[in-house]
Length: 225
Ligand code: CDP
Image 1 (tube, helix red, strand yellow):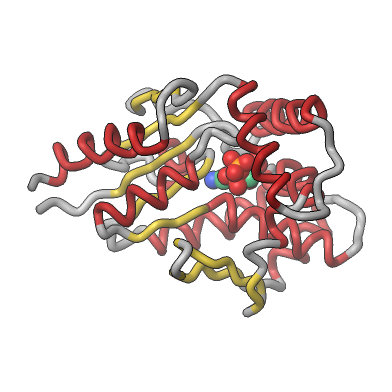
Image 2 (image 1 turned 90 degrees about the vertical axis):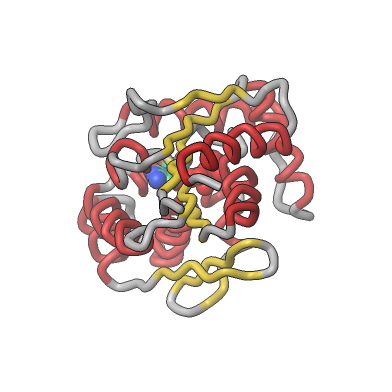
């Protein structure tokens, strides 16, 4: 059986994390949520209560440790040894994560960690630049997307489950998602775009299970039975 890397990229709220988690379980592969790593750096930056600039971000990134550990729910994110899995999904982190992620120091450190994590292959990694920058030779690349309305609905429901944190209207959530997409797609370092050899899946009208099945079958074709 071939050992492969599966890269799943796409815009905010496209369902990359849920898809990657289920797919990894089905394949008995490890799952790596690179967005969680950028979110953890963002939380560390917010905790530093400093101005958002290159120097402060360089300081933040050089002083922290970020780990992803498998758990019953898929994965937990540790920042300096503390579990921050819930905090990194807050509205505030969502507001700051794109500018923090556009920083070259932040990207360099996290891409190095991600490449190490994927060294042994057998992993499903999701993010924005996995098939283009982190693993341009990944054996299977998926670009997952959905309409803005559908992606807003999903994020809206997710926020509503987090008691007390959501005071944004549906339109505000939509605006947040589309401005994050614009920021991520137009930044100078590792912008979000679809790799030439990626397979695009629009999941606006299919279920999570259906799309996992589609990607699973594509993976099995490469891995062998
Ligand atoms: O869950 P959602 O799609 O909203 O976002 P995420 O995957 O958790 O990523 C959060 C943010 O981290 C993105 O909007 C990007 O700014 C950044 N990110 C990145 O720049 N590169 C990656 N490989 C993953 C995330």
